[in-house]
Image 1 (cartoon, helix red, strand yellow):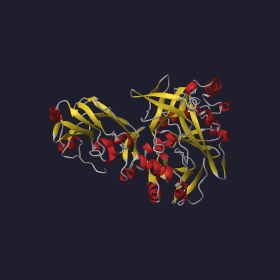
Image 2: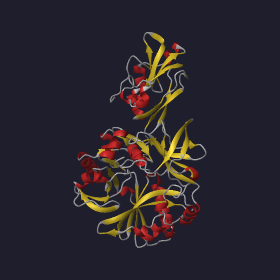
Image 3: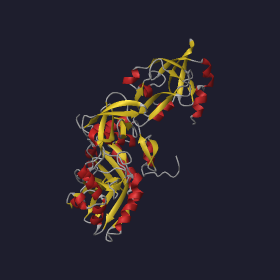
Image 4: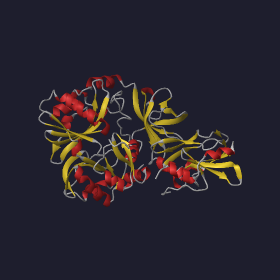
Length: 132
Length: 360
């Protein structure tokens, strides 16, 4: 996706990760990286899928995403247990660049503490941290 | 970025083209424009143009120019002819007394007693100092810093020669030959060299002429390509990058550069290089492909000894590739390597160099 965008229905972590809380189930969230993160990385060539069942902890890395030039940790915006990983990324990691909020989602988690979301930013607050 | 970073004559052209600018060896350089994958493939399939003006130039001139360069450079500089076609080019390494590699560089013979060597940006000042420190033994050789006098463009890919030929006043020099030409009305030293594994030329021109040349070549179909693509291109064909694959702690034999070392010329470090060549290197630089997912990176350790010095995802091959120093007994083609990629052991296989071949 060519232009920066930060959808209003997501929550954001300062390490350039997003969480989409399921509107029908506040204990369930989809996680990914932001437009800014994928733009900084450049073309993603490898996403090392974490295992379903693994625990992720807020503010700590749970996976690595690699561009041609660099490898970056992906930080969990919320704590929980991985219930699904985006298997399509193993063959097509460029979806993270093409559609970071859609086909480029990374994992789905069962949240350990839905209250943690209070620490995350909304789209306008996150966009403000990026400057410009 | 700090204000102390140097900019090439093409800085404005890069910014206008939407380049992502990064610090590289003290310079503010374009790492990519639209994306490394597209730029890489443009060079492999058509034509890319790189600004490599950050690279340094040192001219050595005078009746003892050859003698000084023969002392400094590992290759046999006496073999570098100048004839009706132009001056020939030669690849060398610059060694310390102990054989450790200080730089790798191309030397071009400009005239009977004039040579131009192209240095790596990060090494230019140290190389210049090294050249001058040894020039004392050769009073009739003058060492001249030409860094500010040249901009350098690399035009590379199967269509590169045709695109440059169309604006040249005379046929372009052949591979490994450099000759002066008028390109779009400007004086340019056209060199039949490059570092991508593709055919093409490198152009040395006055910095003031660089923007117009760049624009004209882009207009004629050359795709601007950044440092990221330059790195993936050179690594696919296993060309060394100083600071990754070459360093003072290792010698040219270990690096697989024995072919450009002619010890009988008595270059600085020749005895050390000869000793390693005769005894056999204890470790060797090999090319590898990752077997399965993952990308090894510089600094990754290899089980049983050795380390990765360059690693990336190959845009042409679609697998993780790289180069690594490994113990000589495990350097044979087909050897298995276990690479510790940030805590995960990744299997890799030693492959024949180059990893990428035309038409593969």
